[in-house]
Image 1 (spheres, rainbow, N blue to C red):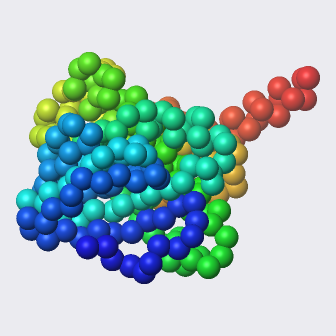
Image 2 (cartoon, rainbow, N blue to C red; image 1 turned 30 degrees about the vertical axis):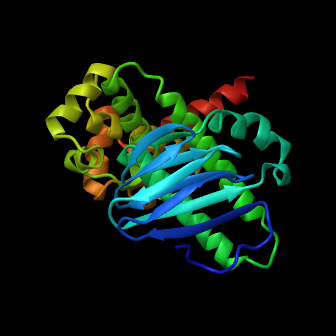
Length: 278
């Protein structure tokens, strides 16, 4: 069953669909583009003449006029996003929609990508609820962000080596979430693998460990903040994800060779000297 009120007019619409166990939606098609994200539960679907199993973090990409049916094997909750491309910016159609909807298919997202997609869809639900009777530019912008994420995600599926793809996904996750990560076990749990296995595939791909790379990403961010902002050391420490100021100072000096304050003064001095010379 569909939850929420009657579908409003607009280019983009998102709603939650709850399926009871053994619920079956017969084959049908739409004139709009659809993305169906499985939040929980298990089931099956048929896209065109292809049958697929469904589970959490699976995403159905359904082109207009594609016949599809859904059968729930258990209680299953899905977020359904549909849009009319004719009401969206031309750039969306040529650079995003054409690639993401090249064919109807099921993407089996890992926990990293699944989390990002869920977050964007939830933000879209909130935007739709808050601004239902006003302009829909917020929804349109979030849709563009989601389509760009899916376009890049689909490129990731071209990796021939599964471990290579996992390592790349982990690397991207660290780069986007460096400020809130703390333990290797946390990363491994999100990948659904052991810490030892995660360490090995990442080291094979990038010749370093995930936690060392996390430190590298954080320190690069620290260096940027030291030079380009007037933030104090405490603010910088916690903004990039260090748990304490002593740890921040110790790690920075060990990796860079000088304290954060000395690094800042040295870099700014060199910058001013170069500009005076010019």
